[in-house]
Image (cartoon, rainbow over all chains, first blue to last red; front, side, top):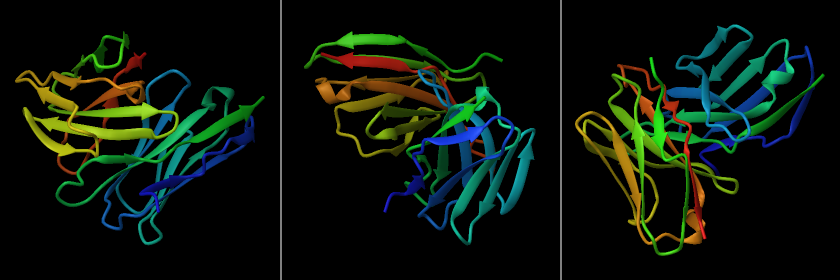
Length: 113
Length: 114
């Protein structure tokens, strides 16, 4: 089992709709969770961080964390064509030697005008 | 505030050579992490430095090494290059405040080994 799993997609969503991206992780002790956006040919850009169970909203983005289910998600409301990118879920490990970010393979999102 | 900078941006090397990549973190950030990104393996952690000390290391061979200087700038070195080392090498810096771990990436160095 991979440490961080994401559906690779591609996920296709019409403009104006809600895009839902999901991520599961295996280290039950993980405390910190991040979503990065990566445009083709560019480096990853941090868009959300979440540390506590529940929802965290920032503009059109909402991150949701459920530690009991080892599940973190990202919702993008009112999707725009500029949101088309690969979204990477990253989880910070817990414990000595695990204080690093582990990334999922990414979900490729396409917003259709 | 200026972002993370990496030099060079592009590099072409031949097998057997060695290469040194440089990273300057965001001002005030003392943690620097290095990642390798390939289409097949995704983003993989190489190592992290904090205050000139290596805090964590990923599962890469000893040909991959790094260091951090007193001004937090970091370098990574790859010796005896192999074709499989062709990748985007990303550096990320973090302030590492209590309870947070946001990492900010530089633009990357695209290494091609021929």
